[in-house]
Length: 341
Length: 273
Image (cartoon, rainbow over all chains, first blue to last red; front, top):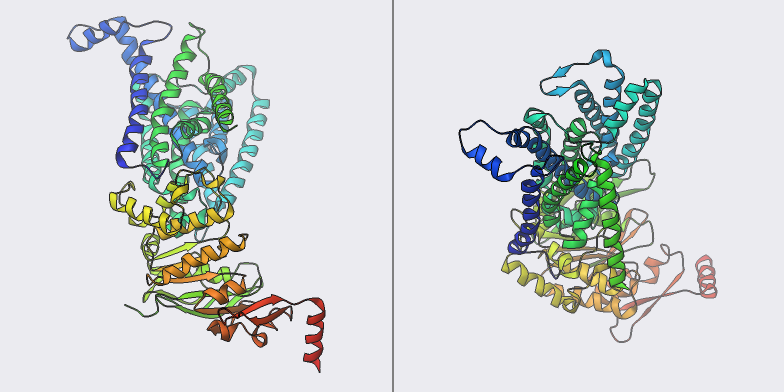
């Protein structure tokens, strides 16, 4: 790249990822253990006739699930892309700061304490506990890493990793005390999944996800500068302390929303931004919006594979993300190495 | 318009938990002036420069940028007028030279930060000025030390600053690249840019700078023309008799050589007697 991209170049690059996302959103709801007839669904939706079984499945099961998979993938990839820049660590991902582990502790605790089982609107007690766990962890990390002139990224990273380790120990302890039935439920939750029941559960994602995404997208013009270090970024005119605070808050909100609804889904936030950087360069005004589209498309396609590969049984989507994303990422690394050699 | 573009008055600073402190340092830089900030390790040169760039906030004193308290300005407003090149820049991701230089336009960009034709023109000028236009498509990590420093200089010049602060920009460069770098700085004087550069190289400072600001152990020792600051009397106590000041016949400016063990011993003997 001879210079930062112009508006037209940015939009041209994003258009490809937008089309990919659109294609994934349109095609994957039709695919599953039951292949749905697009024509019949279209007829049902445009007429006043009672809906057929295909349309019922499409609207009430597939569509919310596909939209959830898309938003979760999009959110995780955006968080990963931003954290990798702000923490100046290419291995950073949504689970790096321990918020995921905090949410998981909440979820397994709710499964263990079944006598406390309740529902809050569309959310189950497991999801509510996961949200509380994520929120408390977010608060704890912020309090520990806060300093007079912003947030210490170094402390944030160390605190996050430590809390993650402590969280995993707590998960093991709670699992140790759990009955076999509870263990199965805990394991299944920790594998992550986007199988929601209708649009009402999906709606519970928005109060945290949308402000979180909004906050992270505000940061996009500043992110390239942070790659050069805090002092250089400040010299260029970036309010580094403000960017760090907003990144932490925005990322935390997205992670809390996602973990509470779907459980931990690994790999998306790590590899999607890196794959995009390999394909489209390092201008984060492209990479972050592209992460939204490509991350969404990636998890949507992975979920489609998860529900079709061993149909009528389903696989946890986290397994598919690792199986498909990992080798592709290694292929890109090797291809670049060969080109450079 | 203030005659002193950058004015530090009685500035003090200390790092938490550290006994070292910067005490009551005052520094002024005017348009078109190339000011060299010199002194041994631990003198406080880089700390002073970071305070001048509003990277660090002093515990006492004031920093005025064109008559305005610099800490009352937003970072973008500061960067609009003042550029700062820190030491040891490393990039997490591989950016091209063109991208790095374009990043310098940040304080002038609106919204999502897309470049206009005017911005591209400024970037081209900065690449030409620092003789890095041919490197435009190369990655920063693939460049030599000299090329890299010139590219980073181009990036801060793209801010079109009125004040330019550089922290040891020629450390690790060979003699050719050192003098080439300072030639670029010298040319900035003609554009009425106020430049302050921290350097350990007393000879470069003497040959190129209009004025020198000598620091030692967190205090200012002397400020003046190179001939006034680079003298045996002034430098001996600071560099502990380990230097010998002589004169460059070509420029008639003082230059500094490291003193060998014997000559140091002789001078110490002379001092005692």
